[in-house]
Image 1 (tube, helix red, strand yellow):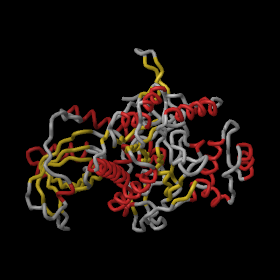
Image 2 (cartoon, one colour):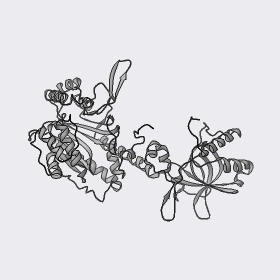
Image 3 (cartoon, helix red, strand yellow):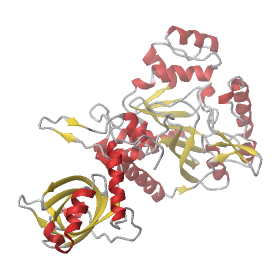
Image 4 (tube, one colour):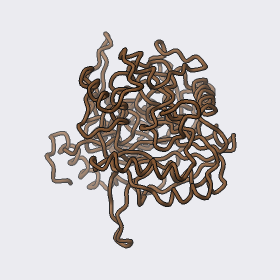
Length: 496
């Protein structure tokens, strides 16, 4: 066993483990056990047939020992089923019941049951067991959630830190959490099918990158011994997907696992999932319409689960507000023509937290994120961002100093980010060089110039539009979760 402090309950279960081995019952057998049914099917009245033989497996949630008969509540992937055990059904092996069932089984153990269906006196569909095998001995007590007549819950596994560190226990005892992840899988599957039907090609791009390009963020750094080179975990897959458009793949997407060595809060985790999608010969106006239709289809299938649906109006078309209009609406200030020193002064006046090294684009970003974003509840396109904030987006065709970029905000959180993609290699190189100068004092946000990406643009990137959807945040919205940790199986936590 691990060299950790062992509770009295653990010691009792370890002793049971030794007793099982002593009577030649393997607590962790390796042979295959047939399963022909599950709790959902068994509880279906159409499926039910008296004396029907079933083979099921699952985890013991409750045990009621009643002398010569006992009840076990078994939980499998679909739900719960009651198992009835009688000493009479083990007539040739009474010790199996008296010793194994009554004394050595515990809540949390995983068992296999062979039996037949019947109804109790209370008309509850159950399985009458005539054979039972232990498949895995549980050496820890499970939280035993109880609810009194007033609806008060006791002994629940509700400590948030424990729940996130021990997601496997959380999934065992909190069924709502399991449903969150089932919904996540369904939404991702729906999105994939939606795009595939429209002839988008799902691709894969490198996670290990020689240059952390496509965004301004602090990367995780690693080293390849054979190549004797430093590599970065990707902060974005954008540049690689654009290279594929250069190569003639006109509609591509990827569910990209990205990594950013930055802060952790209810909307940010160091690794997260983004859906990146690019299409040739379209612009950000087209992509806004696409985004509305795309979300409308998800809403049609999952709207009943949406977070705060009583307060969010999901009416098409979504409102469009320019970046500087949003700041004026929520701060009362018009800062569209201010220079950097004036913006710094404004930040101090309206209590926006800033860093001394921040430049104009970062300052504007802080004003928007701290004073505007959280106040935007209904789905809203924030459009026409300053060019300083958008090094990969085209300059606006009508408005000087702005870019053809939008963000979709829902309930105070950025859900999507889109551009008319910059495809001028000379302009792009100048933008990268300008970014290098702007951020050279802030090492952790130092944007390196991807020369191969510039070379690919020189071969000709067709006019195109791209969008990135925050999948984790989208799942939060549709599963009533306020914290990104609730939609990740294994969120990053501070080491104990």
